[in-house]
Image (cartoon, rainbow, N blue to C red):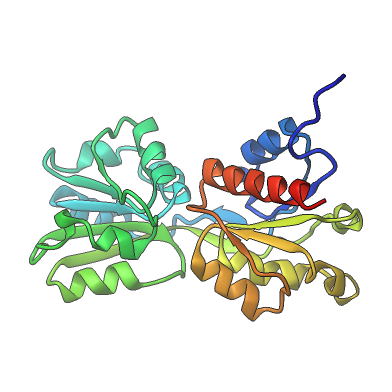
Length: 260
């Protein structure tokens, strides 16, 4: 008898940007799920910052922080010689493990990263970020977003500069036909994706979609899901990484099977 896959007969909508949904959709499909890619954010590079000013900052930078994997990708695309321009003593930091891995892939091995709760708050608690007075800090990030890191480090006395190397926009077109199937689970890894999901879907579908189970990568996203009218309590994965999201999905599937 053919063994039943753990996610057989489940349809899971992945709302990550197109560049980031390939691997998790593939993993979900290998577990038997109907993985529906429905990107709710489009990522575009930004290159209109003053590279001469940034080069000056890099030349004496003591700490460089990457906010996301997108910050790594577009940061190194916009500043291909970034690693060569900073002093050898400069420390690298990343908000989460995936971002740290992206830096490893660029040859940066020593990266400060929180052990859990991959967010700005956890990064700011690291011992290395406590005494930053008069230190030169550069934050590589996307346009908009939270200003917590920049503001907190400045308040601690650091000379902090932020560079936006990408922007998040609402996709111009989506495949609404993909949502006509029975949806079992909606996967969100940012609050912006939750908001955009409702902007992209017609009201005629939303009464059904708001009844769906959601799985999110952070408690802040869970709060956004609830605030925007989703009726079921969100499942919160340990982190937004593929590994932790898949682990949470598998636990959910076991619970569903157990109570079937």
